Image: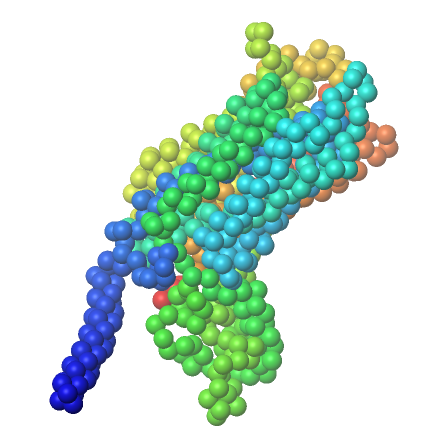
Length: 603
């Protein structure tokens, strides 16, 4: 019995030993297999992982296999957003019985919030949740907001009674609360989607693979294309539904498409590539500032190799590649200088006293990007004219074609049509031709592409000014100067300025998407995308500021000013020329900044 027990114990020990050996062998083999496949280019080289956190094979994930789900998500989400924003002022005035000023203020405040909340989503994505879970969480919030808004326009108790003659009962406090709760849940939802979807789509292409890097440029083109498809459907079909079939259905259809956006996004989960969040970018920037200030009297070594950097293949920042040292902004390098005390103790663990070269270079990249970012504000101010002064100009033109009347605001459709036209033309024709000249796989660099868009914006403002000059000439010839009447000049003469603005968008806005993704640090891509969106909000504020200053200066001494209530008495053309001039000087400044810009170098 004892001998039998001994053999059983020896057998179990042998089995366990062999199991451990096999397990160790399997781990070693799998790691060697992954390393060999990384060298052979079978695995991604940009630290991306699958849903479970494992390295991913290129042939099974990402690339254009994953992009249709992301583009479908973006197209449906933008259709939902524009389905609300395009005609929102009409709902506020006609259904909630607000005055024109209150309605306009509420719309601009809400739209401004939609472009500020991306900073929240970007920080959460880069620091804690990652882009996938940020999109998933905020999409759900977005959908709840859409459903709340639909209920506020459908349930009789949640919407004000209809007007009787000129008597319009005001909305109750409860009706306002439900409506604005839904509206601002949507604004919060956009904050997690706007800065993350474009970056998450670009994550599906391996930065270390030249072939995939070229395809990434095409992705940004088609990403913007999907945005404008959603905008086109909203500005035509959904606006008609809201005006003719009711607001419950008009808000319900966008809510349905937001649900489809979520379904589309989750459907591609198995195919996605994921980048791990790298911790708070704000904290890392503060650490560089504190460490460099603390070591302000320390001498920077002549050899940059003596600056502190971890010895591992990957950087100390999760999900980020190492960045090569640059010779600009050397004062920040002091944060990476190893002091004598740190050298003696061997303790390099306090990031508030010692930062890696990669961490310092992250901060340098943001500073170098700032001048390029700032030039986008003027372009956004020009873009803001499409929904303001272009529309006001259109109201003073002949809006009839036969028996059909064209709403002046609907001409913005030509901007969307222009984008839809230019994206495939750029991707299929301009890029291959430019590639032969420049030798760049994407045809133009992001810097060149944005510069072309800024130049086209000058032409756009010039075209608007020329139309206005012709309109004012007709007003004088027909003695309409002091009469607030439209002149017999077809509104279709505005098409060139809208078409040029669409072309400028394709170059500048898509160029910005590429630039802020490619040039941003790996662990700050969502934040940089949010900063690029911030130029839209600041551009609107700049437009309002310029308009206020111009009005103040040109209405002194009883003068009607450039932009009076009766545009026939004013000089809207002068304002358009002013914006053209600002765009010209902004382009010159951009050229100077672009020549001085040094791209990031990742190892």
